[in-house]
Length: 159
Image 1 (cartoon, rainbow, N blue to C red):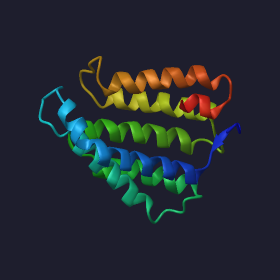
Image 2 (image 1 turned 30 degrees about the vertical axis):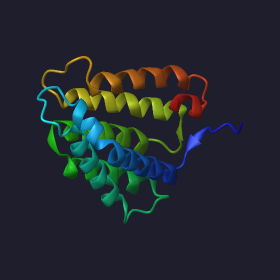
Image 3 (image 1 turned 45 degrees about the vertical axis):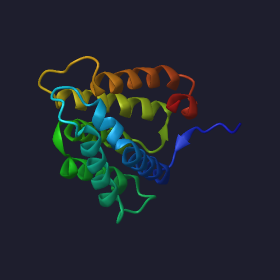
């Protein structure tokens, strides 16, 4: 098996596109899971619309220009955020794009750092963070990524 040691800017765009497609396919299931803070059944839809805005913003960006892609990710998520879940997701994406934009190469360490920044940004978007929500998931993913990044194997960090 080939060892992947870094992500290209084009691969970041591919990941966002895959995230969009997964949210589109599963938004109704996510809507049914929505119970906190209000069981209004729109979490999947709001997350999908937020990521759709990111993809739309990324379309004119050069997929090999890290700065342009990160700016599109941050701006698109902010402008397209819908509902509480969209606002939280926008902060996750903003934190990740900020972490990526600071790097020349997105390796395992940078990914772990960006996920940590995403977790901090998401927590900051909520007045009273509650355990067992997306905030917990993002924080635990960041923690696991920091541990896995010690090997510098990006694939292990992602898994």
